[in-house]
Amino acid sequence: MDYGVGIARITSEKRKRTPLPEHYITTLKERLNALPKNTFKAKDIEKKHKWRKCKSKLPSVAIDLPIIYDGDEYEDIDYSCIVLDRKTERILAVFIYETEDPNIREVVENGHRLLEGMRKHLKLKKKTFYSGFGSKQEQDGGVPSEGQKQERIKRPDAYGGENYLDGLQRYLDPPTGRNVVCFYPRNPQAHLDEEYINDLLWVYCGLYELEKRHCPALADFRLKLAKKCDLLGLFPPVPIELNPSTCVGGSINFSNVPHNDSSRMGTTETIIWKPDENSKIPYVFRNILAKKTFQLNKCCLIYQVGTDLHNTMNTGNHGGVGFVNLSKSNLLSDTEFMRGWWDNWYEYFLNIV
Image (cartoon, rainbow, N blue to C red; front, side, top):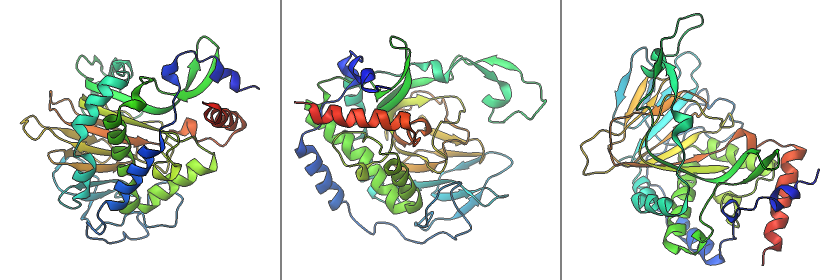
């Protein structure tokens, strides 16, 4: 199959990318190298506590935090911690405030400015995916048991705020009737907006740098998956080692319904947040499986298993921003189909004048 036909027939320049000039990458590497070291109390978690299906011999967690377990009733969390499944001892989430690692604020300090750039250059994601109908049990945070009657309700305010996606996407292209692998829509001139590109690279590559420090096994496995299938980078020609995710997201005032994502098992949704520090409206993230609600009242981040139910709660226009690294399973398959697409994208970039 000539996968290149797919690229040639994507007529919108918004679905392509112009390679970033070298000075962006030089600046990014200098900033990452200058990010202070030894900024948190280090301690490897016991080997019996692992991320599910994360294949790496590196420590699962390398930061010294209190360990708590999933509960029967919701618990409000306003402290850094590691959350475990009481039955299996697997890690469900690692939540860290800037008080435990000041580098968290360093990475997300200009988050609101980055969000303004996203408004300018990216396409606002439609709320269809997060809205519609659901069950009363799901909205309340429960998961209906088999055979349990579900009360179907409308979700008039399930989705709130703004959400933007960048990076790579696989979808069915109606004009060609084929599966297409390309980039999310973006303003073709975005690569000339130096402030935006510098903020974009810093937040998402800085977030991956924090993942390498806090949860080495996760970062190692994410990179191994990307290299195994010869994944095209998020921001060509930024090296895959600086961020091996398949896509990234950014949001403000965001809320959605409980959902699980199509992340590759063994990787996490790694999310970093910066609240509006002048707002009195709570900014809250919820892990349905763990029965925890995390208060995002300072700069903080979470390593959250994407395939476990979770959501950002609708508390109103809290003004907070969040940014996430994702590794989607449908882009990490080591198949002839995907390799065909990657080969043609690499050729496309080599031939750009």
